[in-house]
Image (cartoon, rainbow, N blue to C red; front, side, top):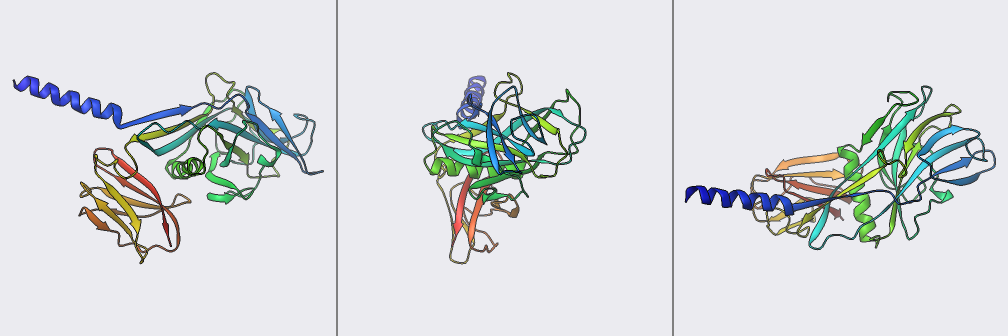
Amino acid sequence: MKTKITLLIAIAIISFAQISAQTLVVKPNYYDAWVSYNGADGLTAVNPYGDNLLINNGTGITPTTTKLNCAVMNFLLPSIPAGTTLISASFTATSVRKDAGVNSNGDLYGINFRTADVALGTDFYSGVFTAGPNVGNGSDWGIMDNMFAISDPSGAAQITTKTTDAAADIQLLAFIQKQYTDGGVNKYAFLRLNLDNVASAAWQRYAIASEANATNYPRLSLTFSVGTSLDIIAGSKVICYANQQGNMVVEGENLKGKTIDIYSLNGKRISSENMNENHFTSIKSLTQGNYIVKINGINGDIFSQIILVK
């Protein structure tokens, strides 16, 4: 009898692990592109995909000259699985070539969703990286500074795969959550890699594998947790809000012993505290603005929500 009981418990644990969360890996749709800008006449050009997307400064690759190219990738946002909440996101891209003379880093941005999967000339950007919403062209979202870097290995056949780091994952999650909130389901959100140095030497480039590359195509990974944002911690009801003093307040069940991390939208962790009660008030007083709250449990369960402090 003891053996049977042990087996039943094991099955229950496995079943919970299998349904507690699911990750969808989204491959770019057919029309990846690079967008180029002609500094001499202010014209932009959209260039259909090839095996690789170029982020470079040089002449002779498109009809325009004196340009900086941006790799623009589109992702069809899937429907949110019933009964789940988006809790994490990450992005992976591969450079299949980096010229030795590259003197600029490649930054990652999000571009708000559209109904068509076609890149636009207005998707072009080159400038100093700023994390968070409403940067770049004014409606972009800064996700990761220096995702591809001057320090990366160089070579005509050098494969360098990069995945967003922890701070960038927070930015990406906030960006994707906003796309869903604004009605982006089954529409195309865009990610862009662009150089941050307009004066980059001619013909120096990163060649970013596009969706046409069967092995190294870009990947957007979205993880959805079973339950709503109010009940995904060990099956408990959780409410999180900011009080009039700007402190985060969390109420629920089974919160004791978990940690609460508060991040700004630029990915900087502002505070991290252990919750010693099921009704917990953070000691950190926050100024007006939006913050990302993450609650982590010892069993890997997680709660994530954007909170506005007024």
